[in-house]
Image (tube, rainbow, N blue to C red; front, side, top):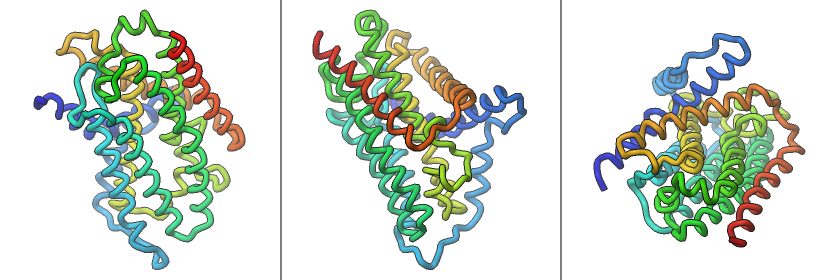
Amino acid sequence: MTVLHWVLPLAAWVLAPLMLGIINRVKAVVAGRRGQPLLQLYYDLFKLAQKGSVYSRSTSLVIRIAPSVALACTAICVTLVPWGGLRAPVAFEGDIILLAYLLGLARFATVLAALDTGSAFEGMGASREVQFAALAEPSFFLGMLVLVLHSGTIGLSDVMSGLSAATWQTSGILLILVACSWFVLLLTENSRIPIDDPNTHLELTMIHEVMVLDYAGPDFAYILYGVSLKLWVFGALVVNLIVPVRSVPAWGQIPVFLLGMGVVAILVGVVESVLARLRLRQVPKILIGSATLSVIALIAELME
């Protein structure tokens, strides 16, 4: 383990909010608007950190600690994700399960806090969040199972470091199927269009935003920063999968990886610009279709 391995999560903790800035700028350019500055989220986080938090008298300690728990979980997840051929600073056999459970714990804390408010409105959003999460998780585990079987290892860093240009030549179709499945997973887990609209305030269509309406000040800053870290984690999984970073010389792996993260942010912005938000009844169909892609890849891997 070298200092370079810890530079990776430090860069993620610093650059994660920039991904949301890129997405918003792409959407503005496609719509012919000037749009927000690329560093808008940094300004918002700094402004929110200087304010105070307000809590309802009907809430308990749950709503106070939930933002910290969710942020801590996503921050730890960053340390589990490798950058191509560079291993994650926290890497061991079975860390894939820990990554999934940390993301699940962050969601559980957010949902529990929404229910703690006693608001039927936030309870509705919490119900939708749990439902869609249950349908989205098979895509992650089935796609990861394909990679585990292909690489013969159960450590996330070992699985990702085994992907190279040669892997694309022999099993490119499998990687494409898993990449498409995980990209839908990225949109779902981060409440992006067409699954959810992070900018909407329509009561009947909100999912994630409705669960954090009671937050303000530093607590809301934790929520926003945690959202950016979660987007980084899923973006990193997609980049590790589709970009053969390991085939690049060691000195160029980090720039190539960062470039890939920028491309993922641009792609998310383009998708949100050309697609409309789906009806809630249509979302489960998309998630089941995403899991089906991973199932097809798994069947193909088992037949080889």
